[in-house]
Image (cartoon, rainbow, N blue to C red; front, side):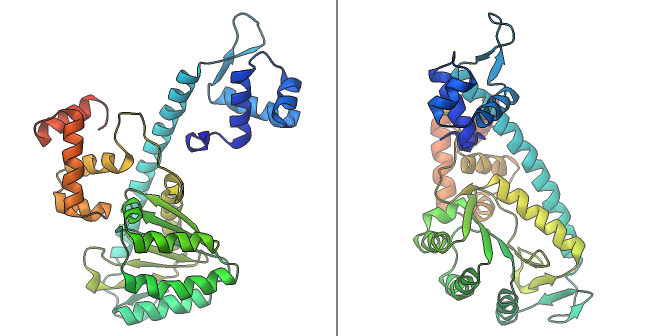
Length: 328
């Protein structure tokens, strides 16, 4: 249960054991939990690192457990700080990747130069993806923003994914949280996990990205203008930057079958928080909806619910109150 807050199963077991039997020693906890003494000691060390165990004043040399209420608050605060750090890294990586990719916008269509090729037209893109999928030997990574995926895209992906998984290829995909609301997309994502793939979701994603065997990357040259086509590159520096972007996105996303934790019982969800941030930056409802992969109606419904929760009569007042509560 507490894995979402950063506690590994063995560490969580030791934590729960300390709550129920805080006076027990290593041997007693080992017998109680069915863990080895080495596992118990490792769990105690990690609990100390997380500040959930502190030196006892009554028994010098011993440890005392902080209250569960304070402990959970400490875990949440640590996660918030880690998430903020990752978001800053993600923003820097997105900016770097966008700058590098934009430099290839003037490539002659469907002609490879210095390991980079500009693909124009759905047929050219699909042909290249099929060839890359056929040649996979290790892993395929994918970032799929925009919420619901078209049935055409899903139908084209299924045979490629099935053949790759049958050959033992590792597949990791990150969808936008709003994809959970589309029956076709979520059905496909669940099928992918049942076949052995790994799927996570995140409220806000960088542009579409595919990486094959850590060697080839395919990205849109301009996410706002699909007519410019896609960039297929083997340049090691670009692929490495895009792979870092994927890993940062993957680390901040959650598994498909898990519920995204809230920072507090009354605070906004991650999706609502991203919506507030986008609108506070001056983005229109329509533009924010596109970034989050949701409809204009959903954006307005979520903002209405947030205004009601904040007891605000206007969006301006909602922004002020959100900032006062530390949401922004």
